[in-house]
Amino acid sequence: MIEFVHPALLFILGAVPIPFLPRSIRKAYLLLIPVLAIFAVLALQPGSYGAAQFLGQEILIAKVDKLSIIFATVFTIMALIGMVYALHLTEAGQHVAAFVYVGSALGVVFAGDYLTLYLFWEGMAFASAYLVFAQGGEKAIRAAFRYLMVHVTGGVVLLGGVVLHALASGSLLFGPIEGNIGAGAYLILAGFLLNAAVPPLNAWLTDAYPEATVTGAVFMSAFTTKTAVYVLARAFPGTELLVWLGTAMALYGVVYAVLENDCRRLLAYHIVSQVGYMVAGVGIGTEVAVNGATSHAFAHILYKALLFMGAGAVIYVTGRRKLTELGGLYRTMPLTVALYMIGAFAISAFPFFSGFVTKSMVVAAAGEDHRALVMLALTMASSGTFLHTGLKLPYYMFFGTDRGLQAREPPGNMLVAMAMAATLCVAIGVFPGPLYALLPFPVAFEPYTGAHITESLGVLMFTALGFVLFLKALDPESTISIDTDWFYRKGARAFMWFAERPLARYEKAVSDVSETTALPLLHGTARTGLRVDLNGVDAIVNGVAHAILDGGGVLRRLQTGVVTHYALAMIAGLIAAIAVFAVVWR
Image (cartoon, rainbow, N blue to C red):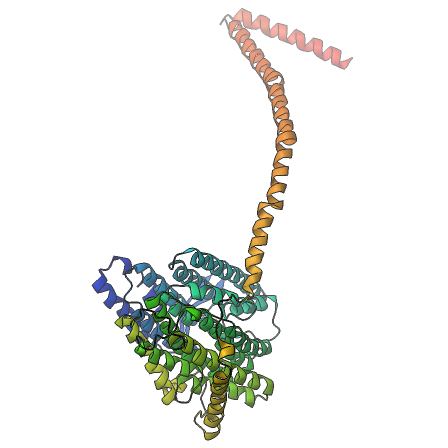
């Protein structure tokens, strides 16, 4: 009996035959692998698997515990939902990339050492980049290159941190980093924070996600940032810096969402905001806070995917994604509207929806830890989330001014996938017990108290009132918001200018000096050396050789075979030796 089946291998190896399968068989296969992966995760037993030695270091391919199991559970569920949503695609490339992406995320979740983690970490970057490249067009390709370059840079930072940390600690095993954090640990933290989209390292997300394919954006919304939350929870729980970074994230994303006209870019900013809750929870580090961060990651994957699926359905049938170009779709897309709104209520933390039973745990953990400012900021961010994702975006996308668009419901598989995610959003909100049972620590949190429900509804209703009163002020405008991506966009241009102008001119000047001075000198030296070699060294060598040959010829002629001749030669040699000795002695 096989003791351990790595769920990552089901996806990574399972991606190989996808392009060669007939389309009818491929559809069944695309659903079969995620289902098998779900069962494989549910069958896992806590423990360490795949221990080995590499370059004198202990390597652990998989470490299974409650924290890794809950993330793997939601990843495999999301893989199934995402594949249902993508069944209508005829291009196998996106399916292959999605499989590798999911498999790499699972590889990170179960990684027991930094080397294994790093390899899967980079696998995520390249597989997800394809989902942006696959959209085609100049904007998507440029965004994909920027996305890939940012993640490759982050990977180099992470690898440098791993090497330094291994040298300092003497181990590559992946676990909590305790005590004095050295340079290696800070580099590891920076690599993790980049994937978590912590400002100012966040612009890759809001730059690339809106440019990805309709189905690719759904997968991207679920895995990269939540994998980063997992590794932060594994390595840096209780790190004070994360509390304030996460709190800033929660507000940062909401503020930028105000400015957005692109529906998927607006949702991308709310990924930044919602991941902020998780990062803050990890930073607080108490059992309640880590449980809250973990459960919120679980819920967020599902409701954010649902929101991206709803926006993707609109883009799929209309070809438009700007709020200034949308409106009046509720008549022709009622199912899409209803399913989207379930995701909107979930992200806004409405009672009886998933966000209510998870986000509130992080806020409560901040209160229990006597962090009033953090608690206030997270509550304000929750209000802003409802304002933009729950009210502004659906109003201008589905209602508002009727643009006369010829729309219809998306393909059935897309609606089924949205319904699957919506069902889970409601089920978790109504019955949070099964989710709480999966959390890494025992749960003593009760979300459905009179005070909590009243407070939440008060904030939400006040937000709705503000939306109605200031509706005109919230009208989207066809503008471009400038984020921190401005720096690397401009920085890249400055680098190219430097490479093409000063650096190229310097290279040309060096080449000119080389061609006009150095090369003629070298050529002259080479010619002189050749003449010395031919006329000097070769002449001496040849002369010695000729003398030896001539001497050999004389000796050969002296070998007559007559004894008297040899006797005369010996007498002559003896006389010569005596003469030389006499001269030297004198």
